[in-house]
Amino acid sequence: MMPHDRRPGMPAHLATPGQLQVLQERVNQQYGAFGDRNEEEVEEGNRRVLADSWWKPAARLIGGIFLATLLLAAITDPDFSAPGEWANRFRLDTAAVLLWGPLLFLALFRQKLSQSIRTYLVISLFVEAFSETMFHRYGGQAEGGYWNTIMWPANVAWFGTVKEFAGVPGASLPVFFFATVGLLYRAVRGKKTADWTAPPRFARNALYVFLAAILALSVLGIARGGQIEGAFRQTVHLLQLPIVALLFLYAIRVPEDLAAIGTAFVVTAIARSLLVIYVYFFVCMPAGITELPGKPEWCTNHSDTVLFVVSIVILIAHAIEQRKSKITLRAIAIGALILFAIVLNNRRLAFISLAVAPMVIYLALEPSRRKRRVTWAMAISVPLLMGYVLVGSEINSSSPVLKPAKAIVSVLDQKDSSAISRDIENENLIYTLRLDPVVTKGFGHDYEYSPNNPPVDLSEVFKNYRLIAHNGVLWLWSIAGVFGFAAIWMVYPLASTLAMRGYRAADSPLERSAALSALGTVAVVVLQIWGDQGFSSYMTLITFGVAYAVAARLAVRAA
Image 1 (cartoon, rainbow, N blue to C red):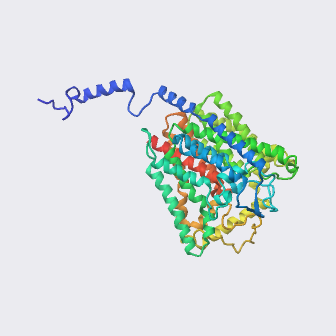
Image 2: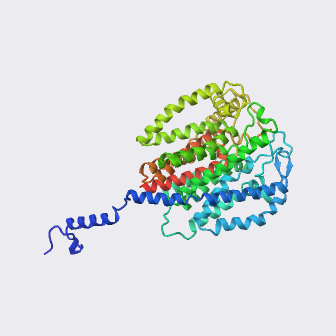
Image 3: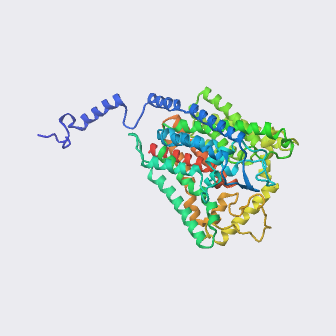
């Protein structure tokens, strides 16, 4: 006769709940509780992933790109068809595709996907956007740069349009775009490893909504009389953002790729910091540029602000979570080099990002002894920094040591010509939004001039300055209206929420530092969008795509 507490279908030796409990305890003793890992397992997994930091391949890749572009820059000159217009005819650097093209194909489509995505990330971080490339005289244009950067052959090859690179008529997308689409197809349709997990549906759907909103607003704008070319210029980067984010969402592995991703940012930031130092001391200083007030405006480009600050955020988060003196000292040394480059590159927004992003990380930290130590460090350092800003901003000197203080004060004062023109531009954007707050004109239209402000003509410097404003948040709102803005913008707070969720539930120092880094990165990206045309930057969209994918993967892993 069956015992009254025996479960139907259960074997005799597991007939009662007590017997089942005994078996479960024996399994837990042997293998650990289901879903739990003991401290030894966590530490071992942490060491294994950190060992795969990929810093040597990343350094070799950066070195190879640099030597190749240096050689091409030495044997050929940049070609312009008119002031401010790049020539789209065949050049010697174009012919070099016969050498690097097959190598790029092998690296992106014949390696394992995990290796290909790392290669793609390092190339995209190290090579500059061609639209931000510095030339001494841009085809005779009066507003030129300080030199013809040695990076220009790589820049036009990767981020320049195919028309700019090879003279193909109408080809207005870069090699970067086609590489991204090819890798995305491979990540979605290619052969999967046994441990591969599909990216979370909600994260994909948010990107699909983003993409659909951009397309819908483009159709609406053109239907309401907007220019097709203008709509393309406004959306070319926005359309690529969800594609890049989807690529990383499908391709990266958590936690296996976390150390390599962080290393890619930091190693690239070191390389570009050295480039900034070279430009400042060996290009600008001999020409007397550094003696002029507020000069140089920048040494490489605006987007390096994102790379540099995000790299420092990664170093801070890594040091906080690993809690080892060796790692902390290494982070301080590398961070000091990158910080020096930030000072020389002289972008005001970089100093604001350096204040905001670490503060976001600090607020996210759980109450602990570690957070109390950080609080004490801030209590000591903040008064010192305030004194430096107050005193340094008043000293009449062009020393780079004082540039951060002067830059921060200029942001707070908002009295220089640049700040005044931005204020006028922002008021024009708000005025444009008020005209059509719900059913907007869409993409393809200029913003309107407010009758309360005199128009500021920037066409000599920025040909399409009324198509794409500096303040990307207000600009997008004025174009998309309330509902369109919400559909597009929601990916940024979503990424922050996912990063916080991943941090709270992470069970290893590496995962916690990755989640904090993703959170700080979103803050940096949003500031760049707010202050300096971040929607038109490849660096910004790539960096956000990585942060979004890491945050989403960590959040689901924690569920």
